[in-house]
Image 1 (cartoon, rainbow, N blue to C red):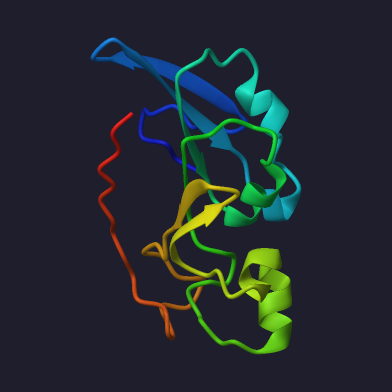
Image 2: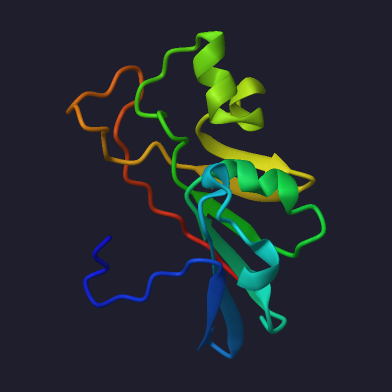
Length: 140
């Protein structure tokens, strides 16, 4: 994947300071492929605001003992086609089976957002899932 000169965060973090507060941007690799490593992503992250970026939102279910203030995720694999048949929902994981598919949700009191994204699979179609760009106004 090209990153156009930007650092891609895969199971790691960067820390920035703004207005005297530390903000940790924590990237967690794709949970559905087994490549996520939460412990490595948080390794040596200082105290501060924790913003987590990840592709598969199911990782939030494994973060009960991990501090985060906001988790922003992409859609599920196959999420650009919303077809609520059992095989499709099972493939997308536990959140989809609970009908947590898109938008703002809370897990154990912590907010996370599932974006429907913009992309498609190899075929240029989207069914029942509108492309979206969202703006998040986060106040650490």
